[in-house]
Length: 166
Image 1 (cartoon, one colour):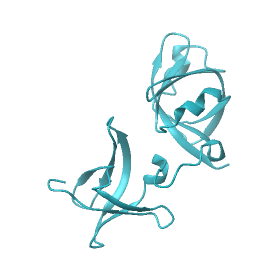
Image 2 (cartoon, one colour):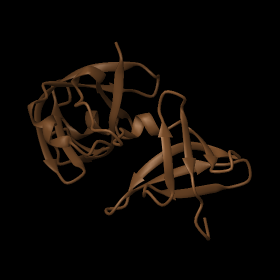
Image 3 (cartoon, one colour):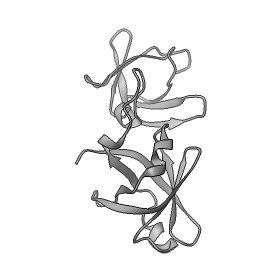
Image 4 (cartoon, one colour):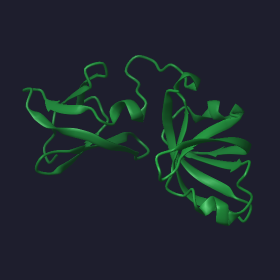
């Protein structure tokens, strides 16, 4: 099954096994009708959990899962990634990408010099920031048109224009 990471469990909530999930996906409003999720445990195994309840608050999902009745059971899942089957996600418009598509891209400047590889993405409110790990240092790339010049998902390449100070 082709699974897609949609978030990470960051903490528990309350005493009844509720989990707080940082959502990687901007169009999380489509998650309100979810019936199940997959969770990747530390062993790398992805297990399916049926949802008892899901609610949204900004970039956070609050979920209650069947088989996770209390805070002790929920605590074991903190730090785990949350997945959905890829075919459940909306098709994005031209120029929009899921974080999972961005992570792992090789980054080059406009002179075709290798800069590094995208290792993570984080939201800042106004735009996402791509964390590019280079051979010498880490570079934070704001996801704005002045910096991100081209993304080729098929070739797994991002072309950037580094601004002063990056």
